[in-house]
Image (cartoon, rainbow, N blue to C red; front, side):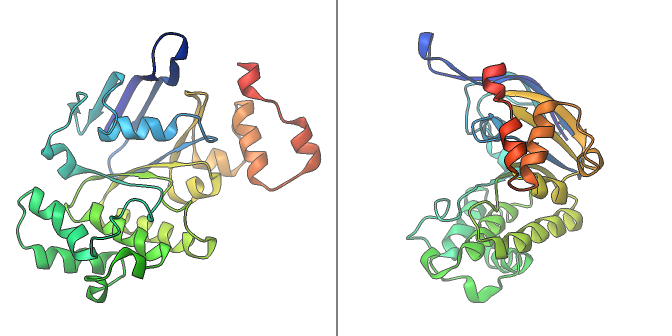
Length: 261
């Protein structure tokens, strides 16, 4: 469903150039969930924005559903590919009701049956029609993210690109959001790319993952290898150790791979 080959993304020019993504390649099968994991600044969200068409300055090959993509995307692309952003407090317009948030994509794509679609989308994410005319400030963080997911789903896409979709939420509601996304993928046969720095989230959601560091993919593995603590790259092993909680001896033994590179 998604095939990325030798993707490069740079910002700036001359001595100020930043090579944010450096020649990454991976493939995602239809109906599966694939994780991009790494520390902040590793390039994972930058890659996701290029796949979604939000960053047109890239080189390489992006293929979605057997179609090569250029820097600019048309409406047909966004009918099949939607993105859920990290911060539900920033991704919803503060002066737009939930009704307007959900009706706009329906109007833009000329789909019709707006009331029916909005009701169905809200029900899908566990909110119901009582939330239809509320404003974002009247919703909790978890409810806002459910609205953001409903907005992505209302066009009935095949692919969701998820950029740290639970990191801005309280721990108590993160599991609810992840279980909701898992259930929606299984129900509708959706394909996910999930960006996260949290290995536990990746292990819960994905079947395969790529570990990014300093703009490169250093290792691609399946989740069973991650759960059984069998990564091969030292950076991945270091991430796995860090995810287990604070350990003074382990921290002192950590290597700065930016310096090593």
